[in-house]
Length: 212
Image (cartoon, rainbow, N blue to C red; front, side, top):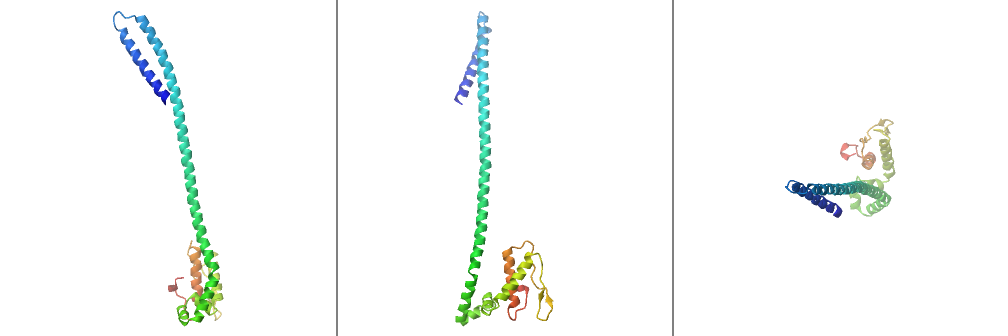
């Protein structure tokens, strides 16, 4: 940049000198040949300065282009980094969600067993557990509820909308819930188990108000 500034000043000075000499040519008694030679020499000097200026401008343009390319590359890389960060966040959230489910599932049997023990020792707890999955565990319906829940869940995964169940009289029913299109598997599993609990709970009639 310093050289570019220097060459610009030189060009301006030479152009001023040429203008001054051209003005002298118009004056009477001036040595026109000598002035003309000086003007020619200055034009040659000016051409050399202009050539150097053009070279500097070309180099400067190349530097600007390289900077622009580096900035574009930097922006592209930063975009990739940001995408990777967002992707990592999504993966982390996904893993945390499913790890949470696994951990909850791992203690379910223990929770139900502890709840059954508490209910055996407390009449009030037994009353509070009425019409719940704890009640199913207390009265040994849990395996039947789980089996029915699995059948309903798998039927929904396989794309079926209902599964025929053999009733006590030898007939069939098709009262199982439908899995909604694109319904989250965890929510579908919850609805399947709600249905299974209602199906096996004594005196309960299947009803939509149960939420399945």
